[in-house]
Length: 204
Length: 254
Image (tube, rainbow over all chains, first blue to last red; front, side, top):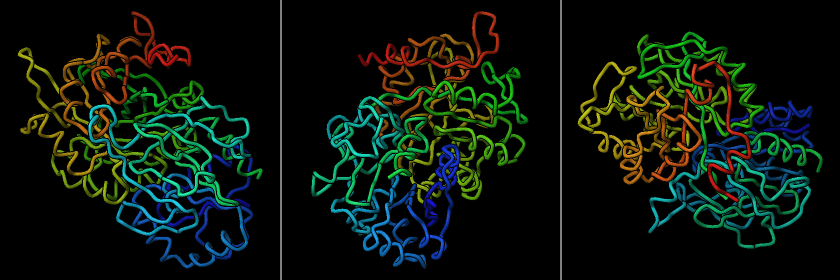
């Protein structure tokens, strides 16, 4: 069972609906027992980093989540804010993250060409795939995915970077560290190619 | 490479899709869920649904319709129409919409923009501005479906909503609406120049080339109503959208 973690900071229904369309079992839960019994986890996320972290820390599954991911190494996919929360800290709210992946989150800032690159980065963009990993099986370099974010991730260790995307600057659009995956874009909102990514994750 | 969005704007009136000219004379187009299914197959970038009666009848938008849309759409969609408080916005976002589109109630209560942005993030708030250009070339903001005049000047309003946390601004030319004769490029340029957030142009698109002109004038994305629901000089109803080849031509990627 794939569990989409409900911590009141993400559009969980869209993700569940995407797995449903793929014919893959998926539940939305904030129940510690259900989360514990999952084969795979999704950490969604839309909104503010600080609020997202607070909701996670205040949940009764917080410790169990860390244990499942870091000790039992259950595969987990972070989406958008979910991906950013997996890092060490963000400029948004100047808050510490889960610290699962060594990296941090910064605000897009374009000093000179303010006219050209508006913030948030909203729209369709492609991935320059660094590593041919199972998550990107059958995904091409010119496949487009939907991004909507004002902050982006930087990694300490380049070998964790799975893909880069360019919007005024080059940022990490997906990463992987062992069982921990993160994608900045919304696969549940990116048509067939997005569904492919979710299917690939389910098959890992 | 980043590609600007092309967004069909679908107007809702009594659970049906309609289209207007200069914000008057609405004509019935069809069933919204059917339209979503077709746009899904056509791989549309994003959809925007605006309930054009909400503000006038003081009723927020139909949640069950949004839920149905959310079941069918594998691309982002935004919803607007009479959203006047955080609860309205929360219900819509919880049903699966990416963003809410604020218009009249943002003018009456700008704090609304800030409240929703603080709670759901700036990327969840799009403020839509309906603008009429008079024969002297002066711009006037109208609201409540074009029936009321706003006192605030257009550029001042744009600056204000950005300050309050809007993540996106939709500028809608009432003057060009439904005519399919091109966007108001000067208006797009003036507003994009002072905006640090994405500006979506709307009102007047008649052919693919109009999209390119709007982007060159500074629009971050382009929206259209008539173009995607009509076909031909007699305006037969036909849901359509540029295919991959046309998109490449419009944005000259290759």
